[in-house]
Amino acid sequence: MASQVTVTTLYKMMEKGEKIVALTAYDFPFAKLVDDAGIDMILVGDSLGMVVQGNTSTLPVTMEEMLYHTQMVSRATSRAMVVGDLPFMSYQSSLAEAIDNAGRFLKEAGAAAVKLEGGAAVSETIAAITAAGIPVQAHIGLTPQSVHAMGGYKVQRDEDRLMADAREVADAGAFSVVLEGIPADIAEKITKAIAIPTIGIGAGALCDGQILVIHDLLGLNDRHLPKFVKQYANLGEAARQALENYADEVRSVKFPGEEHCY
Ligand code: KIV
Image 1 (cartoon, rainbow, N blue to C red):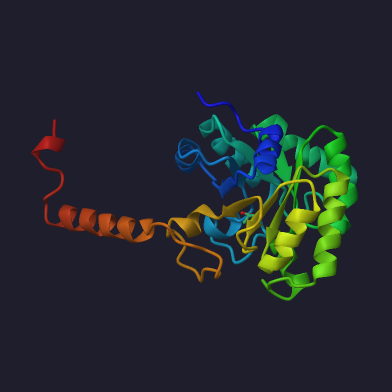
Image 2 (cartoon, rainbow, N blue to C red):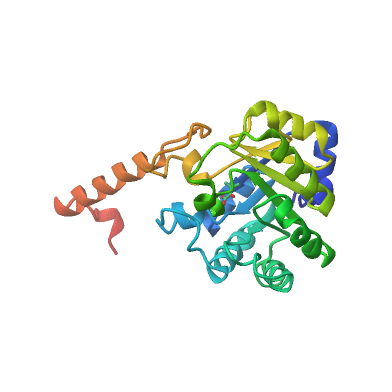
């Protein structure tokens, strides 16, 4: 069995210039595929609110739902590092609540780290969770939990603010930072300026690693896809075809055949 990816593994990869490959997963079968494919990090993202639950934002997702999905992913994973995403309002009210909720991902759901959204504004929270012995991944730029504050899902271009956020989360002790929806040249400058791995999504090719939402990559999301998504397969179309074939064969009494009968 390949050795488990840890924070130390990620630092070594960054130092050697080896790209870190990350992807979301939300349940056992997909997490097993992702782990078997040698992906380094699985984020159980609150994006599940949109691609699994069918909501129009990530805001309704609860702690209990995140723990349920993270448990399924952890059960399927032997090599990848599993990161649990702290949902909206699970870490903003108080440091004590943030530490308790972060701890639940490790204690009850088998995650090795947590992620939260925000830059300088959440640096105290990052420091407090880290001090409790829980690795924290930060997430700056386009932060979907702040969709209303940002006035929509918009590319973030304020270089000074992005650089300040990146430095603050690194100084607070984050082991890594997701850079979402920012111009590639700013992401490159941030990657050079800070000593922790940057994981890009819509942030160009020069981050230390990349992440995508698995449903987008596999063609399982019918909604509008952002420019940064590359669809590597169309499983949605293959599934639709298989389901139509099944329905036709039941209706025309071709299924079950003799080979399926006792
Ligand atoms: O929730 C999520 O899946 C994320 C990634 C897209 C970075 O935050």
